Image (cartoon, rainbow, N blue to C red; front, side):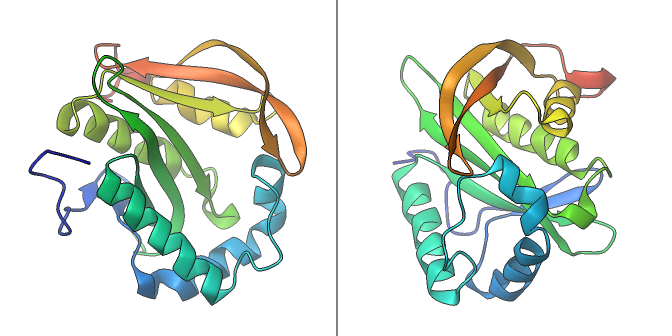
Length: 198
């Protein structure tokens, strides 16, 4: 459970140069399902295998319930990424596996709709979540893992100040196949990425 005063239902949006992040709401369903549906071929190589009901409203309600439960337990916080210039939903980013005590760490995962790729939105989102994790949650370390062939994700992490630490063999089952992943991490006092405050 988050024992800190900033964890309330009215958690403010996080605002960056190109994106605004806020927690997902039940009425985001239509925009989320449209974006995910049109981006399916773009996303599937990098995600766990999609279920037959992946985009159904009932599955969405379960997803929102999990987001709220994880948030209430203090183990994760999910954000939706909105492009600042258009106000449109562009993707999602989650800070999960949050641990306090001696670890003070978390893990980020993210996705972006195909039509929003290549605009620097995800780099901005990763920097925002990193700042939130370090400055607000007082975490010491954030990790992220990506498939070695995912050049876009590698570029995002490196531009956001993450460093590659090694290879995790057969780490996650992605699209039905156990895949190796590079482990990236950022420590609270690491220098920021690409010359900007991270």
